Length: 338
Image (cartoon, rainbow, N blue to C red; front, side, top):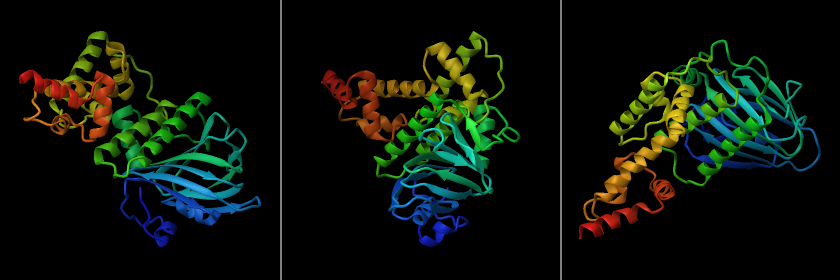
């Protein structure tokens, strides 16, 4: 994805300035200004109802993905086109009938979908809010093959409106809103690891809600194999303790789909893989803190040794799991040695 750095690059999606990897929010007081705010798109907005226009865009551009939420105050006719070899998913939060894509109503239980390089038309009512996800085609195909174990060549949606259900749609909107809110709360650019995790999380959500095709049902591994998969995952994470191994990497390493991995962890441990991966690293950090003295190691040293580079998040997760701060564990270890 690209972040524009000038008015020229806003109007020319072929230019590729470097992303800042930060959540950015912009407010526009003109429909044309609003249309130019969304990076990488070719758009024209016509205002159809009277009054002073106000629009807002909160956007995060990652290496292979763009996530945003857009609000517009007046009824608009939009002609839109995203860059070639990319896919756009549009998830409105507004009531059924308040938006149309190529003259088709976007139902309350549905999202909109369009491939890149094809112009489409949106008609949106006053007070409209819509979440958007744009994924580069190469990244989506790679994720689908390596993590979901499904080919996308002939399986992407072939319609502008994709029903996914009210509950799943609400779940998807909530997760995207949380992603943007969390990003806006941090002034620092996202690390490479954080960007990869966010992209994988969004893609997993799109598969989970049915916006993208799931793999064909397959026979789940027998119980001994399920336990073996969980054990292999634990061993791999501990060997690579200095970095946070994520679910896509485990799927590739263990040669299983994300759904199979989730099933095995849920059956054996009663929790999601990502939760377990974080928990065993937190336990490792606790053991190191318990065996250290204040003089010999700091909380930051131990956190980094276990792949936790965001110290405040590490402290929050640690306290939630163990009921105390990591510094308290370290002080108690020092007192015991005195």
